[in-house]
Image (cartoon, rainbow, N blue to C red; front, side):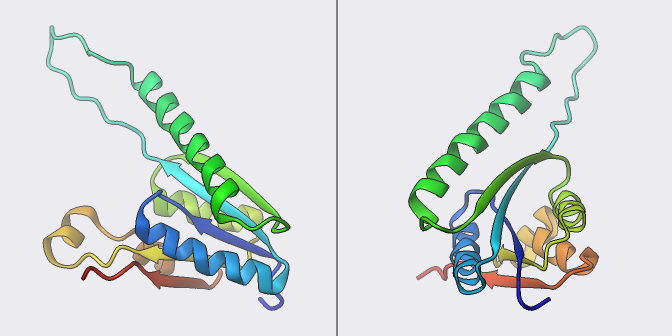
Length: 151
């Protein structure tokens, strides 16, 4: 694992994910490691009633989500990643935890740095925890970073 050469950092463009990014950037700077930022666009499940046409295209929605992620990554690289840090951005489609773990394995990363949203109770039950699933499934070490505390 040490020295770190590749760091994978999932980003969902939320404030907690930016806390994880700060730690990933610092590790990348310290170890001169490549930083791989990943965003996973979840597929849309469309349920329509017989005889009622769908009002939008699932493909168009997915393309719009990917384009929005690409633009957000451009802003992040420009404003949050210091020059000199080698960075790549990847946009994948699928279930976030599964795709994060799969990409970590295929890229042979040394560590995954991921934020936690800090949800408890019904929110955690309803939305699950991507970070928790990544920790359970990953073959490489996972550093979890708590999101900003509400005041």
